[in-house]
Length: 319
Image (cartoon, rainbow, N blue to C red; front, side, top):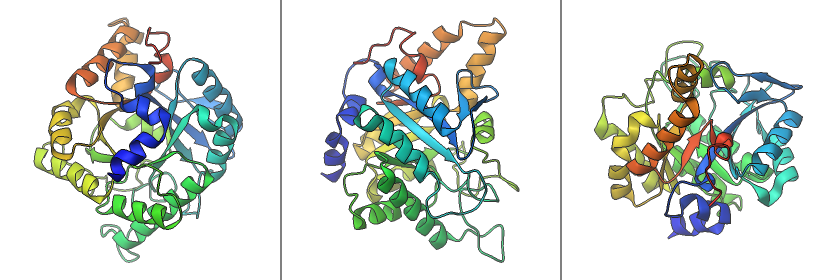
């Protein structure tokens, strides 16, 4: 029941999850906002997307809202590496102070951008191979609490630690944020398609990779179990990543959990389409629109895509 109550509490979420055809209300636009940055800079491969300072981000969001975008996925990038009490809280406050109920602001919740090691977790002091799960979950929970306190409309944990949804839900509930929904990156594969994102979020690991906690692309059972665990721990929405290489799992996960399931069209997927378009090998806009229709045909109830702000130009209506 809690899942349904939180999912219906906000009109933007009701539109996001409404049954029917593809609309702008079902698209979520990622934004990268860098603390202490002045101006903006392009992100290699992600056409029409930039790393921005707060003022540039406010101008971009204003333009996006005029073009019908209502949902944003914020990636706050700290100016300096280090596990701080509330990284990104000032960014969230500035955005919600400017746009209030005009938008629904999801905040990606992870440690990779702030950790000096670039990983999604904290390690035990005497080892860079043993995860300190308790410290990681406590930190993720404190981040989520700070984001909600700063005005975030939803929390989106992307770390893939066991127990993170339950830990975040407990922190939110204990501090008066019972109505803040959690959109869990519930099935996140260890994929080769994340390159442009890691540059944008300053989150490339300093050593090794993330196979220790992300899912092997070959393992269907692990992928299903990960989403079911997130559902059991209190997630309100589930999300698969990368989108195109996960479409076979959309309907099975929905069938097993009865929760809304969406996809993240990740940076490598989007950049591949942009490259084909730039080389004259396809019509980028037509290819982008085709992928959105395929995601929805496969069962995605919402889509995170770097091209959400292009939806208006592609003829997608708000509802």
